[in-house]
Image 1 (cartoon, rainbow, N blue to C red):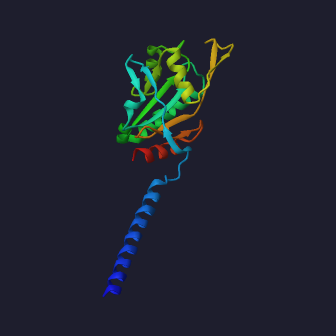
Image 2: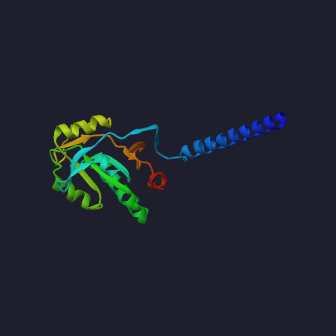
Amino acid sequence: MSTLKSNRNLLIGLGALLVVGLVLVVSLIRAVPARLNGSVIHPAAPAPEIALQDQFGHPFRLSDMNGSVVLVFFGYTNCPDVCPTTLVDYAEIFDRLGSKADGARFVFVTVDPARDSPEAIENYLGAFNPDFIGLTGSHEALQAVYESYGVSVEIEHSSASHGYEVGHQTRIYVIDRDGMLVETFPFGLPREAMLDDLLHWIE
């Protein structure tokens, strides 16, 4: 009887180990993201805080966006090429999300606060989508954000009518619903690819 009991206990123990093993395998499979199109940040890291003010003069904190997927782009309203192209992408993606757009926030951070007043940003974003969030702030506050996201800003003198252009980061930063920086979209990534990735994080 003792041998039978011992064998039974052994079988129960092996069965428990098998169940635990299966649970771990399933957990690992679920933890591995689907194939993504952007530059994946692995392991994901907490997104640095962004504490600025929006185009309506209201205080903005990135941490208040938890629960939504946030796309962050650094640009300026006088940008001749990259910025309007990116905002057209923003607008197209927003429209194609349909009802799921409620789960995403599209953010534009100025790299040209001298010319990008809240009013200027409001007018600029309004041409693409008035629901987009435009941010500015003091030199110190903006500089802290630039540094935390590794964004370099360089004034480039130009003969253009607006006087100068600004060299800046062209990537879009993707922050998931838990406030984790999970990937970036390089400039030129097709909209369909960005939309697919965004749906992955929203769903």
